[in-house]
Image (cartoon, rainbow over all chains, first blue to last red; front, side, top):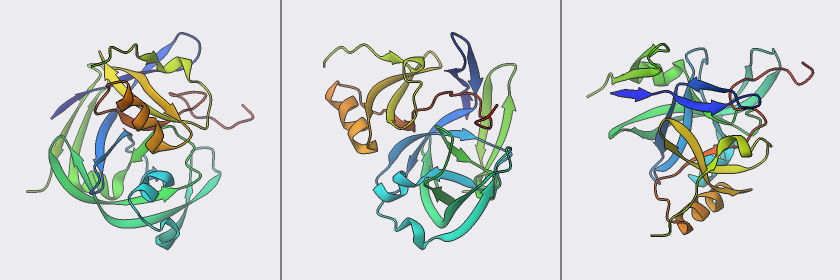
Length: 134
Length: 69
């Protein structure tokens, strides 16, 4: 499945293309924008989205995540959250955080990348995402 | 269906809001804004936009750097 990068504004009138996709989250199928972040260990989502799913966020496994700036933030890992990407449904582990500093949710290595093979092509500003499950 | 003008994302460079966004020609446009996620989606629906996706507003959508830089 090929997905185009999405252009977003940076400073002034400039823009940058990022590997952003929409996924449907939970049984409620809440559509939300995610950055495919191969450098993220886990998938990090804004806690408010987990609350909409009815999760008790702080019942998850508490983890302290560090960013490129080194400052840590607390997230709560929940296992087997259903997601759907272009009709492909699976379950991934998601760390929900009230402190996530990015506008997008992040899809990271454990375990989004265990469920999907992702090939980035910045030059073409597109990515190929292939499910690795039946 | 109501014809609605979508707002470019660069007009929402302030943190603290939920945005209901849609993609047009590989650019994100805002269809609904609210402090709560569900309300942002509801506002997009009121304007006839189905299938909007949620994200947070931010000062900068492409770069993340320490605050003091």
